[in-house]
Image (cartoon, rainbow, N blue to C red):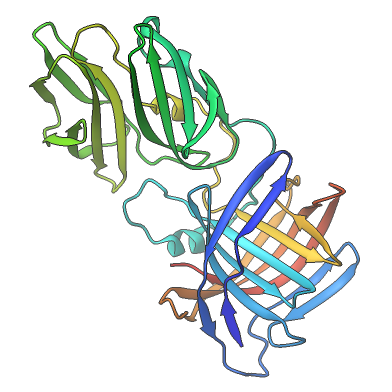
Length: 360
């Protein structure tokens, strides 16, 4: 018996597109009468029991990516009936972290939720020196999403770029990474200005935890590792980038625009868009589920799961797959609402399960 990935899954509901891609791995499971992976329960249409190894049922594992975030997943399927469970990664701003410890210690996991309301706004009016800005075209992951004002609807890590046109028709583009809908374990912004002597003065402002290192770049050229920056600049627009490492292991990169001409075309980094996002519950280590039954697809993301329950009864290492990634056996009792993709009717799912989940 093999454990491997399913292909790219495209979900579309409530006017939101969720693009999920998975890397294919596999693991050999020894033939055994012991039902290692299984799910037993009930939902609309009656009771069910599916066991890996019986009736051509397979246990698949996958590390998927959804809006730049890993989703540690498992899928039990016999091609006519399937159940998939995924756990969203968290701690996205840490340089290195082990997700397993946080998943195992999360004694009360909750279900992720999606709707058609924006959770972050990209607004020209929130940037500095608006009197000199004519228009901003907003790009998210290289796609134009709006002029002057745009919205982000789904949690994730995004590369957001502003193509700025000033009143004098000069232009510049600059980009920042934004973490939307997930907890940030350290935050800050760049504070900068050019004085009348043509000297750029910059520092890190509003740090929520101690800064241990800053690497400064001007137009992508490294210029300093000092916490405070003071150096002459040429009379033109420049991209000022700071790669910040915090004492708690968080790493963030911020980019701002500084104007060496003293024409006041300075523009702040995009920290304000993270600070002003809608404060829905963060998606760190939330769970999502989907079911395919009788030719119909059911998803937990658009359903109301505010009172649903996940009781994890055990997590233990199973074995590495062929890619060298560890697979864990996760046991849980679950009560969740699912929404059918076509009718949008909600259906309760109650089950006990033991799944294989790849957690690199």
